[in-house]
Structures are given as structure tokens and as C-alpha cells.
Image (tube, rainbow, N blue to C red; front, side, top):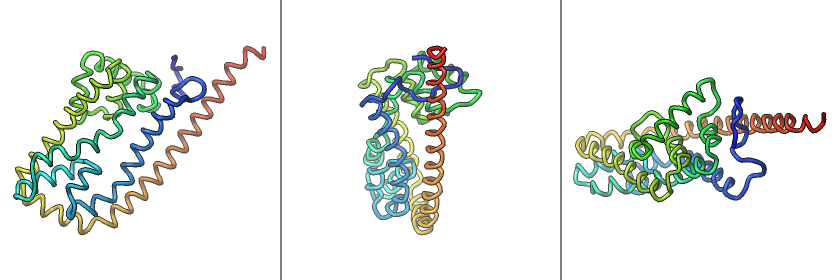
Length: 242
């Protein structure tokens, strides 16, 4: 599958197959789920912190549970483990995108800019050399997690191996923040109570802004992709007309 110098239009050749649609659906659900559960943070973080961590995961929830365990109102092991499934829920979609779409999938996630090719070359180089390590430390390095997962799939990492490494990496992240919250204790719990009290309206406003921006961005990307696809089709058809 070749990638043109101007960047890819769509990551698959021809008509999208069932697997392509499943990947796109998984990636879209990842974004929608994150936005949809954002208002739950101020609603549940004080009253139902375990439920919030189970639904959404997230650093704030994990630190809060660890702090509550430090004050005797919770369990540190629960704080470390409860958010892992939610945080990993859609990671498979990004791995599969890299596995199925190859470089086009990586291009799609990196976006198009003058630096895309050089960044992509570095990602490919480091993934080939240290792919397993990158998955484990994905939360601690500057490259976005989805790109690391897609690169792992592109490099040929098996799904079972990826999932084991992903669990270890997520546990490393949640364990660190849970222990940090545990060591701080009551100050974190008090801060969370103040946060829950004042942040409802701010969170709702933030969700509206994020959703509006995402809709606008997605629409623009789709329009650009359609224009590039039409241009490529016209370029391929030109020799036949001559």
C-alpha cells in the first residue's frame, strides 16, 4: 500500500470492508466515550469514586481513590486496578488500525504537516527497536498512546502480546498515581470535595466546546479526504482518457 507524498486520503484501498468499518467505529467510540463520560467527573468523584474510576478510569479518579485509601476509606489495591479496563477499552482499535492499514494508519493518526514524515520515521525506528518497551511506558513518554499502539500493530506485534504489555503499562500508571494519592491522603480528599462542588457548570461548558470543536474538525477532515480521493481518482483516470 503506497503513501503519496501529499499524504493519504483514506487508509484503505477501494471500498471499506467490515474490518475497516469496525476499526473506524472503535476509534470513534473512543472519542465519544471520553466526551460523554466527562460530566460524570464532578457528579461522581466525591459521592461514588469507585464507580467513576470503573466507568472512566483517569488519573484524577485513581489519585482520589488512593487518597481515600490513605485515610482509611478505601482499598489501595482497588484504587490500582479498578480503572484499568476503562482505560484500555479501545486500545485494540488503534493496534488493529496499525496492523491492518500500515503506514496509512500511522499517517492518519499523526495528521498532515511538513514534519509528519520525519516524525513517522522516528516512530517506526523506535518501534522496531523497542516496541514492547514503548507499549509498557506509553503513558510516560511524549508520543500519544494511540500512535504507540498503532505502531505496535504496524510492526507486527501479536494482539495477545500487545494486550499483556498494555495491561502492564496501564497498571504501572495507575499504581504510581494510586500510591501517590495514598501518600498524600486527606489534602487530596478535601480538594476533591471542593472540586466536585464548583466544577459542574464548568464541566458542562467544557463538554459543549469540545464536542462542537470535534464536530467541526471531523467534518473538515472528511471533506479534505473526499477532495483528495476525488483528485486521486481523476489522476488515475487521466491516462485512460488520453
